Every structure is written in structure tokens, then in C-alpha cells.
Length: 316
Image 1 (spheres, rainbow, N blue to C red):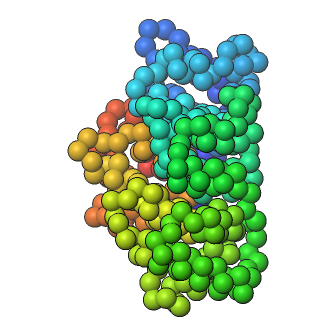
Image 2: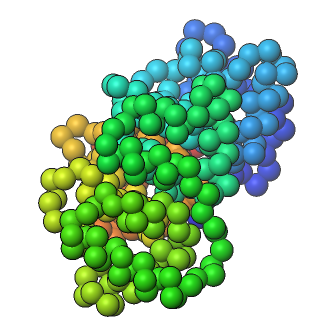
């Protein structure tokens, strides 16, 4: 459920490119025009704009944007203008770097993309970095995190609705057993979470809840300060109800003493064309204000305008 509003009649890519070229020209950049165009084009249209811009002006529009814009506004526009697979590759690579390392970003990409989208992101990673994402994640993580993240990112889950209830029952018992033993890094527990289809996992977790009296995430809260257990709980949430996970990420990004713009930018740029409507509903349900009000109160200027346009509340 996308929130990006596309105008009823969209100019040709060439017209958009001419206008964008004008927005970059002269002394000041016309940020409003950039928002008016890019925030109101879908992924396929943005891809055409990029190709056309390169054909017309022999420039990569991402480089032009990088030159013309700055700070959080630049980051959200650049991430948004990238092809989704290229964006995921970029975010995954950034998440393996020392200063921007994040197991959470890697986990999000692995668990909330379709099998095909994750496969495309891995291909884009190869093309851009001349290495595999698994290679970089293996090198930059250690111990239990490596054991969990590498198979998670390598996964190609079945996307259909078919479920095997016999498997669901036996695997719910395995999960319960391993959690009771506090064997959170056991290969069977990791295998189930990293390979089973989302439909199969839902069946397993429903059986777990009915049979053992607790939702699995409650049982995985043995030590709330344990980062590995926190990541396991986030994996379960992302695989079963991503909108709840993302609503929570947005809430902590906005409620911090000083906004976590990286998290806010990432969630809006990666989910605006996917499930932002559901995330907004969940955010409103869990918080006293709707997401657009929360963003308006916490951000400013062109950055705020771009975010609001992407979640379907902009004036542009």
C-alpha cells in the first residue's frame, strides 16, 4: 500500500529532466521543483528519468543531486531516486562499515523484502561493490550475529500460501525446546527462522502460541538487554507483521532526544511504495499523533517537505 501520489497526467521523462536541469541551474537550487517532480514519480518513472537524464546531458542525476543538495534532504532524495535494488545494496553496504554498522538494517532488508527483491538487491550489490553481500557481512560481523545474518541474507524463501501443519507443529516444538534451553543460537532455531516461508512461519508461531501459552517474542525476552535476543525478536516481527516493526522504528527515531534522521529517512524512502499506509495506521494506533504530525513537529525545511510528500501528506 503505497502513499506516493502520482499526478493524473505525468510529463514525459524528457520534460521532467529539462525541469530538473533548470532546478539545478543558476545560483540557487530550486528544491521545491525537485520535490514536486521526484516525490511524485513511481519507481519505474524515476528509473526512466535517470536513463533519460544520462542520455540528454551525459550526467548521472544522482551525482547532480549529490552536488546540489546537502544534509538529510540530500540523503532522502538520493535514496528515493535510486532503483530499489540499488538502494538496498547501498544501505546493506553502509551497514557493514565501521562507522555506520547496523545489524538492524541488514535484518530489515533480509526479512521485509520479497525473495525476488532480496535476490535483486544481492545482484545489485555484486555489480556495485564487486563482492557479495554475504562476503562483506561475514567479514564485518562475528559470532552469533554472523551465524544468523549470513543465512538470512542468502535466503530465497518460498512466497506462496501453502503450509504444512505437521512441520509447523514439529518446528514449534523445536523452537520452544531451544528457547527453554536458552540455546538461542542453535542451528535448528536459526534454520527455521532463516529458511521457512512467511506463511509457514506464521503457522508455526500460531501453533507455538496456542500450544505453549505465550507468543514467541515474549519467551525471547529473557534478557531485554541482550542485543542478539532483541535482533531475534525483530526478525520474528519483520517476517510476520513488518508494519508493527516499522511503526516502532519510527516512534523511536522521532521520540529520541534529537531525531534519528537516518532511521526516519531509511524507513520512509524504502517503504513509501510498499506498505507505508499500513505503517501510518499502526503508528497512529500506537501513538497519540498521526505520523505526518509527528514528522512535522520533529523536522523542518525541505527535508520535512520531502518526507511528508512521500508519506502522502505533502502540499507539493
